[in-house]
Amino acid sequence: MAWEPIRKTRHQAVQPNLADYEGECREFSWQAARRSLDGLPGGQGLNIAHEAVDRHMGTPRSDQAALRCVGKDDKVTELTYRDLYVATNRFANVLRELGVGKGERVFTLLGRVPDLYVTVLGALKNLSVLSPLFSAFGPEPIRERLYLGDGRVLVTTPEFYVRKIAAIRESLPGLKHVLVTGVGPTPEGTLPLAELTAAARGEFDIPPTDPEDMALLHFTSGTTGRPKGAVHVHEAVVAHHLTAAYALDLRSPDVFWCTADPGWVTGMSYGVIAPLSLGLVLVADAGEFDSRRWYRVLQEQGVTVWYTSPTALRMLMRAGDALAGGYDLSRLRFIASVGEPLNPEVAVWGLRALGLPVHDNWWQTETGAIMISNYAAMDIKPGSMGRPLPGIDAVLLERGEDGRALVTDGHVRVIEEAGVDGELALRPGWPSMFRGYLGEQERYIKAFAGGWYLSGDIARNDKDGYFWFVARADDVIKSAGHLIGPFEVESVLMEHPAVAEAGVIGKPDPVAGELVKAFVTLNSGFEPAEKLRLELIAFGRRRLGAVAPKEIAFDQNLPHTRSGKVMRRLLKARELGFPEGDLSTLERPARKPGDQGDRRPSC
Ligand code: ATP
Ligand code: MG
Image (cartoon, rainbow, N blue to C red):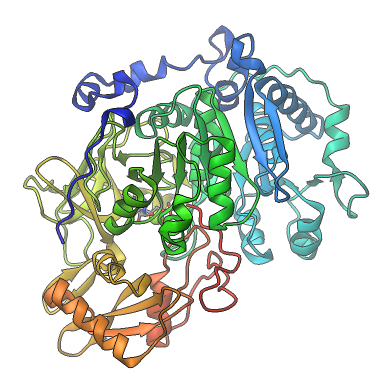
């Protein structure tokens, strides 16, 4: 089906200065962009926490809400910018008094609670490096990351400590201090965060900060294997700030909610830093995914821009139009989505059931900020990721036998014509570009060729400059001479009323090389049956022709990464009886068919 573009209407439009995408791109320079931030007083550099918190002091914003945390019990805790300023100063002093210095690693294992935001920003004030852990990780992935990242301090809850840390503590001699939240007795070997902060001074002068000082250590989602630790620096805040204004159209007095877990890059760049740097009200929900709950939070908090993931949107879609129509979402201007391909079906559903455009955008842990997006005022082409943001030079590179960019004597070739698949590559130089994979210099060097950063994703673009995601380079299926992106096949299957979600892999075949096999999760009301299987195969063939799946299996528990992506490599390993590889980022399976278990879609 050719999807009609979604035209942006006037009421959804946006800051007047953002209405002109072409003009903005023409005028843009990162040098000028840096001037939109303050820098530390006295020209002492650039610090993320200063831009997120301190610079609002002495402005009318200082006594406005910065953070509204909705607790699991629905109780809302509100912190003003001034509250955040004092609390982060106190925490920075706690670190200083513990002797934790510049560049030392502070990890968090916390849900979306006020202590998380205070820890992140307080650590950055102290020039320590912050590394957030996904709170649903079990002991092994936690141990691996604390070890790889040389964690010196961990801030967590007493419950997490007892359940996940106590048993691995011995194997982490570098972990000097574990601070636990809450009141009451603390587990042996830990320090009480609340007591220490209460005793600390509420003033803290951020030391001079070189924009190149390391600030954040983010582990990737591990979709394709062992997670990598991407190093980010304080200068990244320039990109967080501006891309949020451009791609998410954020400006005061927006009320912004980003559902991504703070353990992933989205939850940090846009779930903490960018909205605060713009002086907005940041909403955080400590609860688990539940369609009713999420609609309620959107309504009760008066959210104006919502940033979430395709998995979450697919779940809302699955919960039905009637539910969607039962809430007052009139303050919401649009929804933005990231983390994996946004099926055109979902974008169209958003408009139909919620009356809201869904803006896809593309980026990676490595890029630190949104790179390609349905810019605020741009028409949306369902299924497309949008266009590169101002200041971002994105191209497609010709590919070689292995499916990745073809590098000959250090040179690569940029594809000039529209509609041809190539490896998506970016010209380095934007502020939130990662500065390395921790301890893996060779891997880092390999991510560049011919002056481009190679993303590992395959895409194509059209004559209007919109980019379309095809596949991760290592997911591409080669069948009977065709190159097939699993996403396209999955999206078509999802258009069938029975299919809620699909995961597609290439299965070795002596004749075709690989044949396309799909695993599908059914919507409630549908049961796995041979008749339905044949119907889906026929449906695929009608819609996709030669690239349609030849085999379809029902699977109510498709494996997902913790950050919400279908884990195709695991589907494939299981299918072929291969070892399952690194599963540290595998989401726990749902408890029973149709039940979403504890899955927390985030990106
Ligand atoms: P790893 O690098 O460890 O295998 P990962 O690539 O999943 O894990 P992230 O950095 O969290 O780790 O995810 C970035 C990837 O997510 C992108 O390279 C792309 O494959 C996918 N992605 C993100 N946004 C989109 C989008 N809008 N459309 C399609 N794919 C997307
Ligand atoms: Mg990746």
